[in-house]
Length: 107
Figure 1 (cartoon, helix red, strand yellow):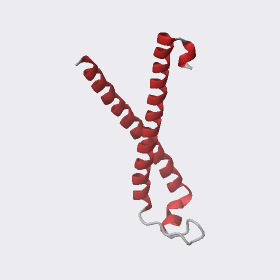
Figure 2 (cartoon, rainbow, N blue to C red; figure 1 turned 90 degrees about the vertical axis):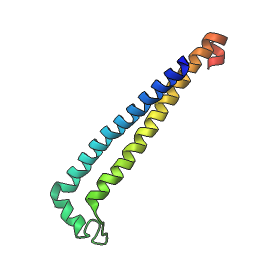
Figure 3 (tube, one colour; figure 1 turned 180 degrees about the horizontal axis):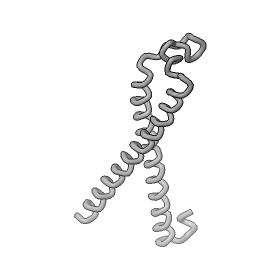
Figure 4 (tube, one colour; figure 1 turned 120 degrees about the vertical axis):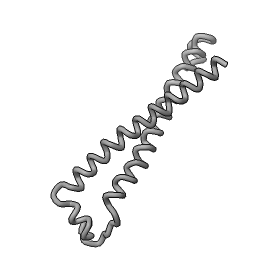
């Protein structure tokens, strides 16, 4: 019962950290992209299809910035958190294995 409670708290903390990190990255990426989008009247060029040689017509670029950035930030936070979890779990179990059976089994 105690292990289940610890695992539940750990999982919720992990999910909170992952969503907070995704939101932070989403805000930063959106701000960076909006700065580039609104600098030097780039939004006029994109709206008129002159972004790349006058051939590209992007529908709703401001909406795409927000939605695509959310997807990218969520996936980046997921990959980062999974990598961090894997590294810490691996380190913990290597430490436990080293204490139980010796250092040569842990490496």
